[in-house]
Image (cartoon, rainbow, N blue to C red; front, side, top):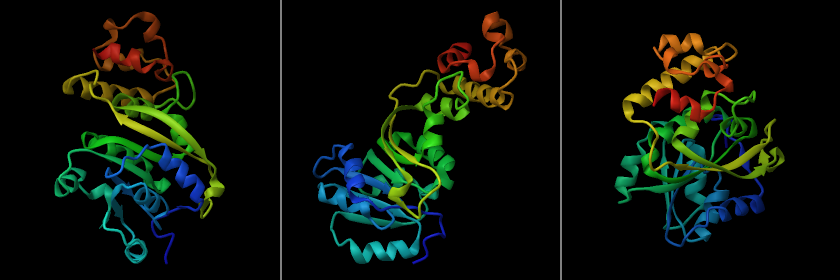
Length: 251
């Protein structure tokens, strides 16, 4: 079986997989979407808990392995690339409006995976992800720290975030160079800005963090916001400004 074609790493400790699933509080008969099931270590536990699983796997060899090794009527395997598949259409096929999702995704698709989840956030009740610790640290960071970035603001704008447990690298095979964190995202019911202001907000954030070490005053002038913002805020660097303060600038 070709393991490295899609840069997969496989969780190999069943006790860790069980703890992860316990954090989800699965109800019998509940539908769960799993992205990149690999060899099915999480899949089997989900099925044992009574979940109905829709698994999406891109690797043909792994799909063959899963079909041969998971013989369960509640296991539904879709062979394809999650990044190119419409979650909304999949849910429609199964007669569902929303679903909870879990994934131990390859690290190299972290950014497009997060973008995809946020783009189709209305399809998800909750999202449970295992990502490298440094990425989760960026997502959960506070302003004024080196980890704080446009990614922090992007994810926190749309999602409530809760870190659930650490997963050291030796629980995976091949062993990655970094440790991971298992965390939960929950789409926010109400967003703080309307669509027009949301576009301006993210244009400002992207522009600001291109020059994160400079005072934001110059960039505020580009957006005709300079006079609206108090002097003390104009003299701050983009990475010193909280999400709440950025929202206040736009609203």
